[in-house]
Every structure is written in C-alpha cells, then in structure tokens.
Image (cartoon, rainbow, N blue to C red; front, side, top):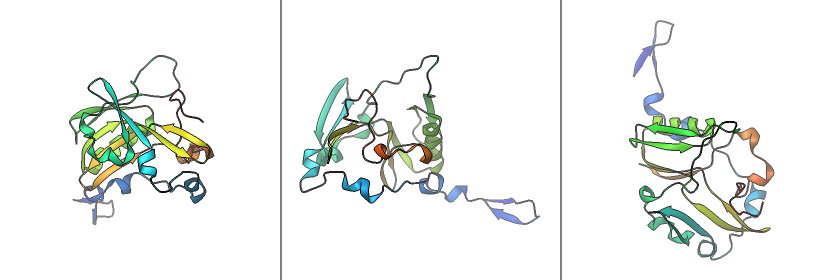
Length: 182
C-alpha cells in the first residue's frame, strides 16, 4: 500500500507486511534464569499442565500438550471486574477470531490488538492453562497470559512491561492465589 509521506513522494506503509514480532517486543530470558529450571532428562514427563474444558479440570504431562485442542480450552481463572481494582481487565474483540478475548491489563489489551493486526491468528485462549514446573528451588505454578495459534505456529505469551519484570519473574512468574511457591 502506498501513501504520501508529506514530501510529495509515495512511501510504503509497512503495516500490510508486519508480523507479530514486528509489533511486540520479545524478552530474552537470561541464562541464569534458565539454569533455575530443572530441565534434565525427562522434564517434559514430570512437568504438568492443567486446563479447563467442558466445566472440568484436566491435567496432563507437558509432553502431551500437543494433543490438547486449544479451541476447546477455557481461561484458567474467571475474569472479574469490580470498582476500585488496580488493574484494567476487559474483553477485546479480535477480527481474526471473531470472538472476544479476556485481558487483565492495558498491556495485554495492546498485545491482543497487535496480534489481531498481524493477521495470521486463527485462535487465542486467554490464560489457557496452569503450568506446574520443577525449578532448583522446588515446584512452581504459573498461568501464561495467552496461547495464540497462528498460521506460522503456536505462541505461548506472557505480557508485562519490561521495566516491571522482577528477578523472581524471570523463571515461571507465579501469580498470587495460584498455589505457586513464590
């Protein structure tokens, strides 16, 4: 798509060719944080994921997650709204999926907009499952923000402004009330 750029010359608008990596910055986990994960032989059979589907909670080994149909999963927690809360939850409609998707912060809402704008999204589940993983400090639990199915693969995403990432969040950031050992 070509539009004038103010100089009288036609300029290329990059939006038709943008992907999610052009619209949302990735965070590289430091090597020290990676070493805290217990990823020895067989980790994928020790770690566990639990998700909600058809009103029931189902658990499986991480090695079996590829068999879970993302479209059938429901958000792990229930999204709630109340006056006086400090975060900004809501529902964002995605043209790509034709559905509303829950978010808990303005940053998560912006990520959903970027994901939709990238155009290759076929499915999104907000807070898709609870991951129980082994670290050098013991077992921890974490609920990722989004599971996105795209034409180029699957993305498991946590959304947080870079300046708010604390040292304890670099390895399986736990959320209060999930039972994690944070």
